[in-house]
Length: 535
Ligand code: G4P
Image (cartoon, rainbow, N blue to C red):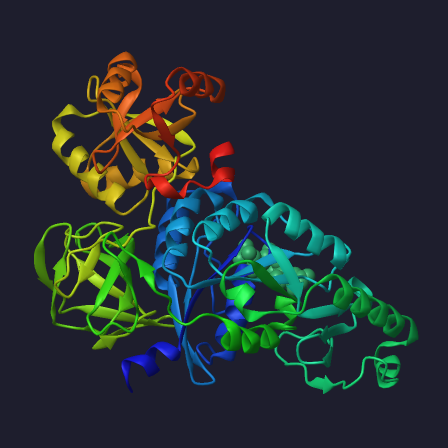
């Protein structure tokens, strides 16, 4: 097959949701359709169910599960689908943000009872930064949920994206009858079952009395009224509006009952984008360029502390990746040969000889690779759009065993390279502060430092509200600012200057007092999403 044909065959996407909306269940059903697993229950939930009861085993299990199910490749109707898993637990949101940089589109699961929840809003912000096309799957229709029109309004309002229903539910909860596909003009009747797949009943005319026979007169009447309203209110579905990230098509179903999932998958492979061109520091790179390039979006440490090698997850962006070839590690300006490369097919890992744009390859690494690194076939550019976001919780690292300072430094650097958290080193006194999205990471870091590096640490809470990357067109003013705010200036992992603001009000005041200084809320400046700034 040619490079173009390989590209046309691929769809690389992620499923995102607020915990408990049904991401794991939907993933499992999709894998069943792909023949990647044989029976329900094979996909373990990658979430830590009860935060309070989380123990070390739980954390280790989480790491184990997350590497096993991080990427699930499967074939469906001649299409190679790469599904990238995102951690359900919100404390691992940073990991999810990074995974979203490696996908070309997203399916967003929303619980029809709970509607749009906080985590979904944040994840949508990240999608919007990159104009990632989104399909919404409104789940759990077998429960008494909110009115579907209200749900659509809520999505538009809270997620700030236009929607276009492509299917429509007929009643809900105990009286749920099924969905009408506005796209295919067919009816699917609901029977609660975990395995069977509903047959579509073709309906050429919405006024066909057969609908009354199948779902009852009242439901049929309601459906006709709803469809009329939808056709009147929402413009015709235009796939380009979806591909540009402006309109999210919406499906309704029940993942646990395997209802509406096949329809979602069939439409997904029809409309979801093939691997897209990506921005670099030099130019936009087309997937169809002959020369290989890609970037690292995730690093996973070996679970066995005696073996320090790690798996780096490479997203192939252009050309063909070949095992055993020499590729340029742009940041280190050197050539590396990857003789050990892994493909992810469902839950099996197998050695990969070649990979194509959209594919994810696992590279065994002994410490050369960091998240965000670019590999190319010689050309010197970096993929952009893999920013760090300001963490939400900050704690100073207190070394409790001075004899193990070296191990601690090494451990901290390696854990940060894996993206477990962000490290900020204060200019004054060399204080090291770790920033995370959730509280759980501190437990993970403390445990892993002890277990893998024999270093003992404690964490001291810090009065920090936000880490703001700073810059200025006027270098003199920037230096003046640094001098006057010395106690609050740190460097991130790449040595970039960061201002550690103590509170929202204080940050506002400092911003007003120093108009020449630009404050950024992600490490890549031009792409600051407003909503992420506000929290
Ligand atoms: P997550 O990965 O997004 O966190 O959600 P997950 O799939 O684990 O689903 C959360 C809960 O919602 C699970 O129940 C799951 O069975 C249930 N669920 C998923 N889809 C549907 C649906 O269409 N209808 C209904 N009624 N429930 C659904 P649980 O009790 O937490 O776990 P389990 O013991 O059932 O596995």
